[in-house]
Length: 227
Image (cartoon, rainbow, N blue to C red; front, side):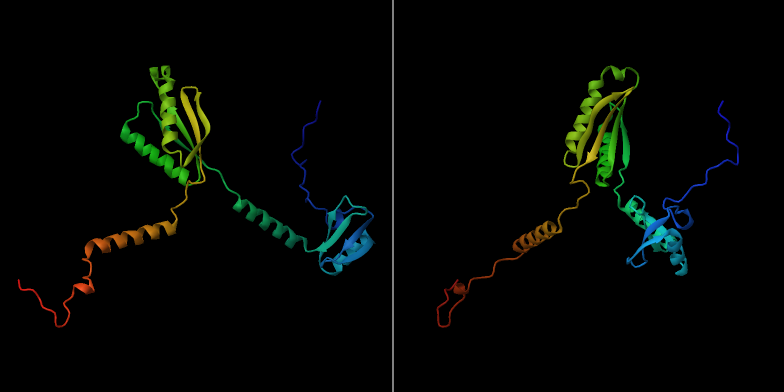
C-alpha cells in the first residue's frame, strides 16, 4: 500500500540553474564576469574566486566537459531574464474570441445592429463566434440558420474570413469568423487628402465665374459699339 504523504513532506522548489554550493562536479571551466576565459579550476577554487568578487558561480553549460561555470550577479541575471520574458509575452499577439447570437427569424433592424457589432469586433482584430439559436420547431429548418450565417459572411467578406463553416452544435448552429488583413486598417491618408483637394478644386470652379479674356477688353482708340 502506498504510504500517505505527510503534511510536512513537501518538495522545496529548486532553481533551474545550479549555482554556488549546488554545483557538485569536481571541476569547471571558469568564465569571468566580463566573459574572459580563466581556465579549468576546481569547483572550490571557482567558488572562492566568485565569492572574492561578491558574486555567484553559475553553471551555464552542464553538458560540456568539464561543465562551464560563469561568475555573475545571479539575482540581477534572473531579474533581467524575467523582464525579457515579460516583454516577450507583452508583444505576443493575443487572440480574443467574441460571440454574437442570432435568431433564425431575426428582424432587419436587429440584424443590422448585430452585424455592426461583428464588424466592430473584427476591426479590433478579434475572432467572432456567430451563433444561431434554434427554439422549438425552428430546429426542423437548420437551412435557415445556415443561409443567415452565409449571408452575413458574404456581406462582410472584406473584413472576415470563415475559419469554421456553419456547423450544428446541439440546438445551435455556429460559425467562426476571423479578421482579414483589411480589418482594422484605416483609409490611406494620402487618398483622403487627394480626395479633399479634388473636392476643393471642384467647389472653386463651381462658385466663381471665369475671368474675361484679355482680347475681349477694349483697346485704346478702338470704337465701342453703341447699345
